[in-house]
Length: 124
Ligand code: SF4
Ligand code: SF4
Image (tube, rainbow, N blue to C red; front, side, top):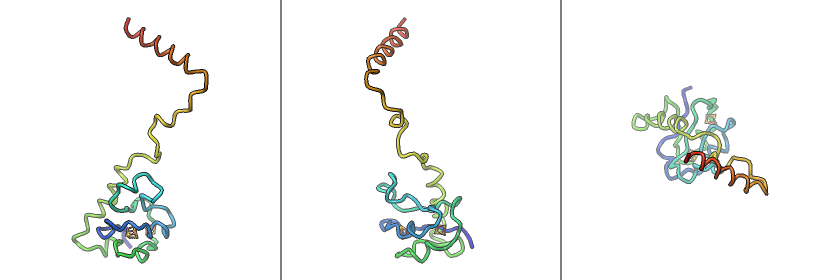
């Protein structure tokens, strides 16, 4: 059995029925992930999928195929699925600046002072 691939019928449907039956959590974005709102469809991670076949009958619009069953016109979706994971920006939903530990109360003055000191040393 070949790779599982999500194809065009998912676009605009995106009901996540397949996510609920996948035993290895390899269909994304899930509803609780930041990309869900903007993604036009869901994608199967070819590196994680164990080809169990659970997702295929769960899809209400027959959007899931294998390499063998996908029609010629949708074959490029195999690359589309893989590319989404290649281009995905890391597992953390937060930009780096939000992950810094919170500044302790009372330390802001010294932080400001040290910023001023380094700014003036740069000017010299
Ligand atoms: S075939 Fe199985 S492991 Fe692969 S995406 Fe579908 S449900 Fe998940
Ligand atoms: S079940 Fe089908 S339509 Fe629904 S998100 Fe999965 S692939 Fe898309």
